[in-house]
Image 1 (cartoon, rainbow, N blue to C red):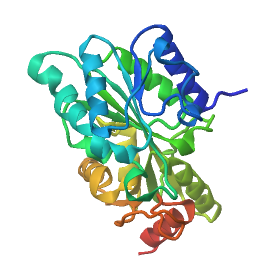
Image 2: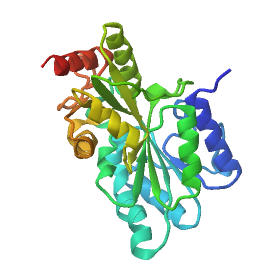
Image 3: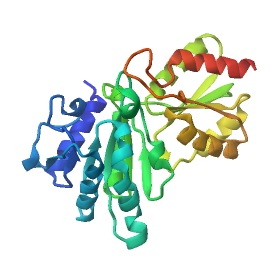
Length: 302
């Protein structure tokens, strides 16, 4: 039986603690659910450190542990809480190597979800970290992607911001890019939008459209491969970039890079420019397959 992403993360964390590579810091780690089932049933004696609910202080504890020549995992249960957790990470850990030649590697597990959780906690907020130096931003949505990122972190000196999403935890499959042959348009998808992008692609192809797809794991540094650049150049309608964050952030920043590399127009889709509420009527959700299809059809028909 194939392993889910949830089980993969759980095994990585268990190994991290048992091998004493570093401690795990966060709030409500050992509470019911064990952070969506991604943590092993271990406690403080094993290195699972429960932090107080003082969100602003949490990042400081992780930074302190990293400065002691360990590699802590810092779990942020809702990505929106980065508005409180980020200052010490961005302004100390990420700058430590450059200014003081002192590595401060932290594996930040920042977990997104949407639906009924209000204007602060929900969705992805990786754009908060994007503009700062000294950090690498990744968004793995499959088991193999996560393993590769963790293994790379172990030999790196930088802070890793790992943009997770609870909607991906049951996933057992790996993603494949499709840029062979000439496409009308190519979808470039980040985070949880990758699943809906695949659905939209299949639906459009059934209707006769020729749609490609590129899955983004490494958000920063971001670099298109040569064959990806060539594939986008060959399209008639360029590409559309999807994200689980507000468009005026990573989506537009990467869109500009892609445009400079390819000379093609880059459309973007992400969260709507509004605050989320606590109900289905007031939610602010990432683009779904139908919305993506509608947008692509409009781009091609214009």
